[in-house]
Length: 70
Image 1 (tube, one colour):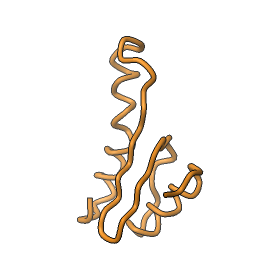
Image 2 (cartoon, helix red, strand yellow):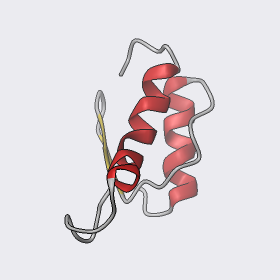
Image 3 (cartoon, rainbow, N blue to C red):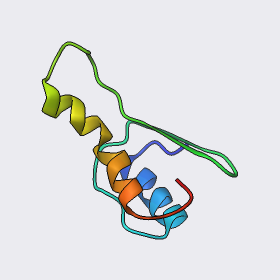
Image 4 (cartoon, rainbow, N blue to C red):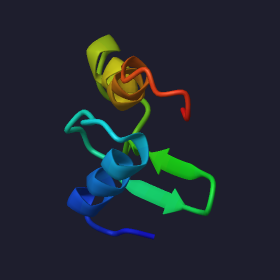
């Protein structure tokens, strides 16, 4: 399991063979055929719609990459 954000981004970049959004990844797990990406929020009562929506920015960027592996 990678522990640095840079390493996590490099792993995703090599798997998807494309650039990925430069956004936070808090936890990442990698197996032979799966990747799990987790973004954490410290509290659910903080932030408005923009803050909550930012949690899907990484997923949105990955989906826009057009790769079928997602």
